Length: 303
Length: 249
Image 1 (cartoon, chains in turn blue, cyan):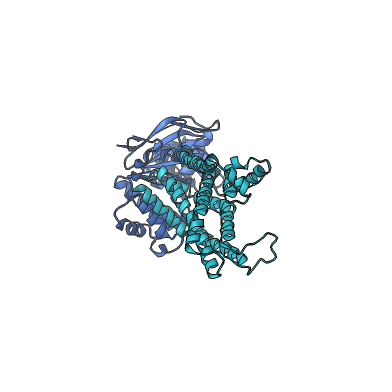
Image 2 (cartoon, helix red, strand yellow):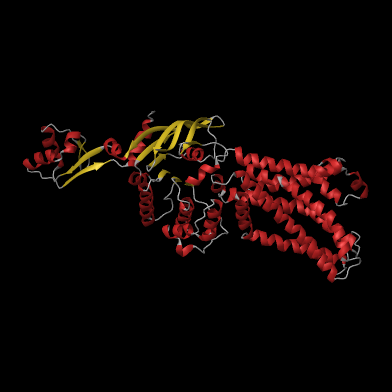
């Protein structure tokens, strides 16, 4: 079942196109990573998905229902954080949660205790939000987003401000929720984090979706190279070239981009060993999402 | 139920805010000062004539609400709406299973209750102090009789403060509505100079309090007295429309 769908979603602000013809289709239980540079249109898209902004063109649907003004009943199935987690500074963590517990009309009083335990907010429940660290504010924001057991989570930078242990914890939590059928739509500038979490990634640039790939195709599309190091790189270079392998010499390494050699590095290694130059370092280096993203964006490729 | 839930949530935010308790404390100071002046305990060298009776005292309270209320109540509505933008919490209110109309109505209702509490506190504390100071003509009947005019003036000032909620929403904070409140007071003064004050809604409470004299008070007809409430209605509709239809970016 499609959980989130947009068709030709477009948003203009004073003649400037912030989101351009964006069409997305996100299945139930997917973790969709939405990445892009600042001003690429990520937050505007999120705001349109939450009914905070009216599209100039196109349509957006959540759980099959069209998002339009006054569709507040839809939001009982959606939890969200937009841009940064904000809370009422004069209220304690517990009071902030209680406030949204009431506003969301949650009848199960135990949900508050559950969400506090889940987000490890126990030691801070009586602390005013004004005195929380950014990481704990983020946990409070996530607690507000999760307290009603939503079927869809729309999260803008959900791991922002968390320490590495917190990031792992939240990653694990989101994966568990996705396994239970919760659809997660997240935007982040921490591309490595998105790569570890998302089952599908959309790259948005200047309001357009320029690339959409699942975690498997990401692996196929990222650039790879075989890196070799020997005690005599100059000789190793000529040995490999004589064997018909194209090598790019760097200062201290030899770099091979030939797909066949990358898939079977032992081919190159065998030639070197035969020539009495056993490699002291062999590694298949994979381009990370950051590098891939910059390459795609700088190419300015349209879809 | 959702309006009641929203009202509960808004009142919780207000109850926990330091500014609410400061406003209540401030509301006690002015009537005490006026009572002490009326009793001749302080302010004996004041350039304006002071009468040591209930009529003079309640007139001062009316003037306080008419002018001070515009600032104080304007601040209340500015804070209730503007703080959501300043604290960045507005986005948390925009995609809830509660309609935005209920949230805005609850905010307006809590604002009105807060202002009402301030007005009642000003009057109540004032009357208590003048009773303790044994001012002339102070008895329960006279106090209740004077209250209707004070109460009506309070309702006018509350209505006139509602547009500040709209300005806070479009200005995304509480600085622009405070500027708006000051501007209305300045224009009210200017309208008096040009003799059109009975048509300027924000000047009506001052005129109704009798500050501009009995002659001006007598000029106020039904139409003039409706103007402040009309502004309250326009402000309420405007803020409701804004929250429902505007792009919240």
